[in-house]
Length: 94
Image (cartoon, rainbow, N blue to C red; front, side, top):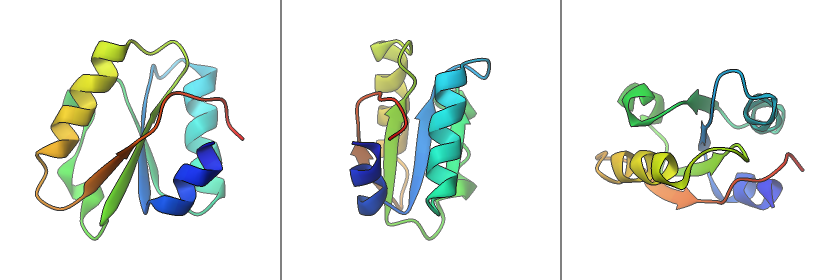
């Protein structure tokens, strides 16, 4: 499922805790497949500079990430001027 997301986007935001092995593995999988990936714990961790030149941003999360936090990050991404957001539920690296 993550690989399908990677085929559809230019970069990925992973929502999860910095101490979460699952979240770190998601970031590593994205990067190993040639996609810039950024781990954030919430919307305040987003940096608009990451998305310059990205037409479509993927959004995924670690398995224990709260839906409310994911929704907050998705809403923050939606108001950025450039990228379209392709949300994807939390999943284990493929």
